[in-house]
Image (cartoon, rainbow over all chains, first blue to last red; front, side, top):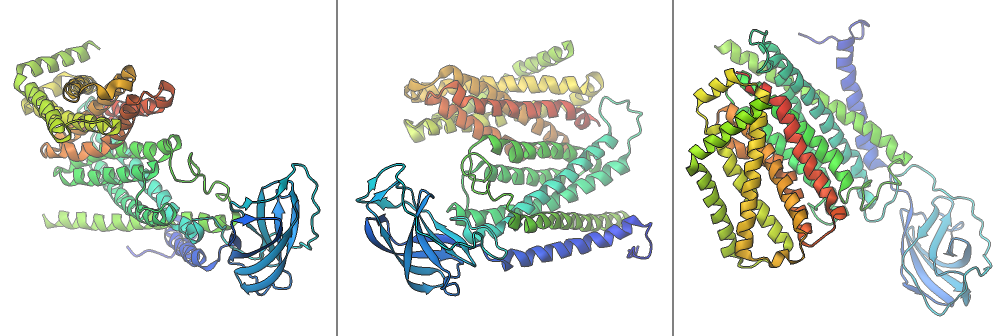
Length: 375
Length: 220
């Protein structure tokens, strides 16, 4: 059957969806592929090259990330902030390049707190804050001591332009969020389709305690089962992709290709369970029995997947964000700059997964009908 | 319920008529623990002790489970099919196998203490450890009965039990090892309770799903 574009026929919803879902999918994925790599991270402070401060003159180089110190030479101000209440302005000795500036700050003998941060500010980058452990030597610390803050002409608090949030350690690999996480969403959707088709298949297969005269809809049983298998095989591909992208990310963020994280181990178990599902299918020659047994195993596998990937990680300690342990993303989960790319990525990959599943199913159906014609 | 007890009685009767099968499993347990002893001599780390106990337990359970469906002749299967309700059949098998595995694991625990001594148990919370071992064993029994029924029906030999069963019991195995090792260090019930809850959930999963889904497997 030749598919119709659906454009001329408003009633033919199916044909319309057939084309437009693919167009939307390709458009979304193209947008995601470009914007994942196009936008920079927002400017941030990396470090200063001293590990202690003392009364009198302190000279240090402040290192920024993605900052614009050279072009903002005139507006650039650097100061030392004490407990975010008082500040001591530094004089800029030399702007070395866009990311490095040499500063000298004069500090008094008395401070109200040893809680110190180094801050730079300019019109393009906004506040650049470096918070690293600094020893303060030779100061008299008087809590509540009123300090004289220097005046700064702050205008810009936020950076200009679109960018992804800066996270220590994760840094540029935050872009992987757009690829790694949608893989799991897609796998979940495909496995859910597979689960529903398996239930359908069993429903038309009947139980042992049914009346044996009950009509057994073998055709329906086999059709649903084929759908379940093809959906699961597509889902398995996304599971593998999720494991690979996750492993690469783990190498950068956590230092190892594989770490003992409940979500990682759960994902591996899910992968093995679904591989076992296909082994079960291929070792059962009888078609009806194959449909029946693999549907049952598939239902079990789905429930196990939900328990392993959705329930267990919430109760056990792990490295993934949003759980106990290291909530690295929790404050940025809802960051608007990530959201505008992340949501399209999820939708695009789910559509791609569904599309691949339909292609797989068509190929399988052609194979089946070829087999039938041979005999 | 009387049907279930009758079926369990049948299983026990069968077991005692084929004493060699049970004896085989017991020898297997003894041999495995002895090999562990020969290769380790003495174990001081609780983690290794727990892991070895459960690796022995898992393979013993696999061994015991291979005969649960395969020991019955095809004729018997068909006879049962006409006679009994499938829900009763699976319930009896689940309960019987869970009890068998629990018993075998307690025996293997006995052998471990016999060979490795009680030094590891010095600080252990024994009641807590036994609860974990019993819950873990029943979980193993339930999961492997489920996998065994599928493998048997597919008609492709006993190898499939391992392929289907192993992924199902990995989460169980991780939790069991964690629970046993930490109960050996004498952790309080509150701290170790989460592992018990997870074990309980992983028990419930094959039990409920097996009960619901077995009638679909059983249909000829």
